[in-house]
Image (cartoon, rainbow, N blue to C red; front, side, top):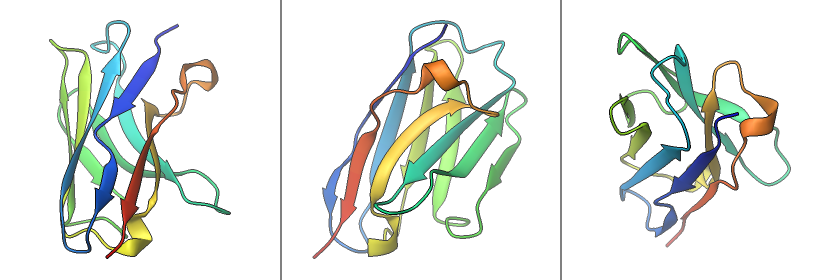
Length: 115
């Protein structure tokens, strides 16, 4: 079972940017859709961005125009570029396949947007 390790989170001021990385323990080439999810305190985990092997992307309305997902199958890595961050983006961010693989969830990376 592929495992995912997220990194790149941190504390950033409103309007700032972060780039998250997700390293897979195995080959992601045959995972048709990869996604970034997030979970804020008291909320359910939600899918915010996804990317197919053909590079087609999809975004939640709340992040559209601000977040960009990409994947490098040669490096088994998925990225999430986040711009114009707001306090509402504060959450733990995870990557996983879409639909998610229950046993592949990593620890996530904390993103905190605050002045």
